[in-house]
Image 1 (cartoon, rainbow, N blue to C red):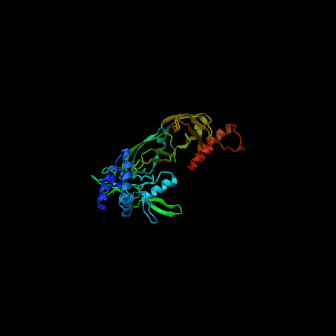
Image 2 (image 1 turned 90 degrees about the vertical axis):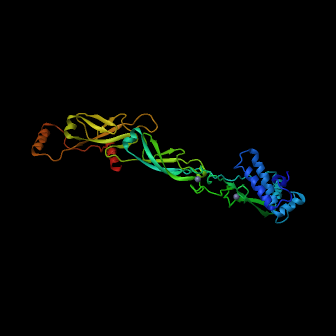
Length: 374
Ligand SMILES: [Zn+2]
Ligand SMILES: [Zn+2]
């Protein structure tokens, strides 16, 4: 083991101040946050260990008298000594002063997820659409680019925990003294402190801002669906990775068309004469006009199905159907002449008198149910 004085590069007669200065300089140089070299972390540990011993007058005295193996008696604070006892009991992996393997925690954390509600019209759902959104979120601070430090400054090693982020304490037990560690209160476990926080973000590394973005809403979405946009949420503290953005879809109510899965549904109101004689009608669908053929003798609750004019399926594979339920409208206010014509018709046409038949819970009834409950 290298001599603690050599490790710190000071004389045996160095004053506590000189030792502190030497330690600070070396710690700045070798702290793993600052120095990416693999050997730096070992250097950092031995520098910290040397400082722990030499900065404590009692340990320094023991060290000067006989080396670091001098294990102190009751009340001793000797970290070197505790390291040794841990090696004895647990076969190595001793908590060197400055960290029992628990690394200081990173300031960078993942940002939160965000949820936005997006309303779309039914006709936009058929083929999909785009939306310009404004997202009020946290973005990376331009001034410090996530370092959290004022320009020209940087984080320094915490004086209290010497960069480990952990404070070790000796607790007495039957086995002797046991080391426990807890996060350092001064640096909150980061191992470094920021002497001059960035003024723009108050040392957070991120600022609130409104971000504009254009998103694709795929065809076939339905109310309640959540679209996940990975990494479009807020940036994390200290420039940590972004969270995700979720878009919760609401499809607006349409006055005519409703939806059953990928099918679109509407009702066609037809006059008695058109139902009897048949007709062709042009109607406006959500994706353009279409011509419907009413066969002579069309009944209420007949369904006209137009293939592939429904909603595009969310996972591909074409479109649903357009289903139009017919409702024959019985005329109400007839003139005397019109009533006479109907009577003539009834007299010449053999139709069944009103009679009971099985109740029909047909598709049309379900269609109407849906209209009532949309
Ligand atoms: Zn900043
Ligand atoms: Zn600390």
